[in-house]
Amino acid sequence: MLKKLIEISFYLRKLKYYLVARRKGWKRTVLDYYRWELDDSRCKYSKICDGVTTEEEFSALESSTVWYLNPQSSDICLNIGCGIGRVEKLLHSKVKEIHSVDISEAMIDDARERNKELDNVHFYANDGQSLKMFEDNFFDIAFAELVFQHVPKSVVEDYVAEVFRVLKPGGRFISQIPTKGKYKHMPKELCAWMTREEVDELFSSFSGKDYNSGGTNEWYHCPIVIK
Ligand SMILES: C[S@@+](CC[C@H](N)C(=O)[O-])C[C@H]1O[C@@H](n2cnc3c(N)ncnc32)[C@H](O)[C@@H]1O
Image (cartoon, rainbow, N blue to C red):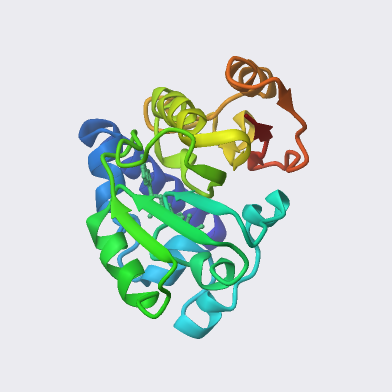
């Protein structure tokens, strides 16, 4: 009985979240993400990575899709939706430069503070769909990690077009696209969930080659695409 009640309350809270998010639209929902409406007791670390509650645990997290790109010391790297700068701490010594963008000024302020000793890492608050602060053919690698579940498909399409503008020829891009299996309950205007066929269609219009080394799990498709 208690289990049933807990389950019902979980689904009611989720339903409330979707209804509020639908009313506010994706941009305001994302900007409020820093405060996390679903559960105010969650700290900023667990908002970004479930189960993590301290700076020490957060900084020690090594898992990232960027490693699939095999970063090199000459690489200039773009991180889309960087949050409070988790990956930068581990990546900065492996590449030449990192440029990281996030729609949220609050996230960017924290990211700058957490990484202030790193002089090859630069943070920018952006408009949530363009990379207009960067010139064409500037980056060797780009990635968007745990981001596209917060935005509509049209925003992903805008970002992919921008990524292919700012990547050098031969540059590599990995992104996590939410799968239909896990996200189909989300309205598409709030979450860019796609079928594998839609992912292939999106990337084939930009690139000759999607070699898909990132694979697919139940939550995300992780295509690696080369310009
Ligand atoms: C779950 S956090 C992931 C942070 C970071 N990528 C990581 O793996 O640690 C999602 C981040 O994406 C950012 N974000 C969501 N939509 C965005 C958009 N359209 N443009 C840029 N950043 C966005 C959020 O503000 C948040 O910082």
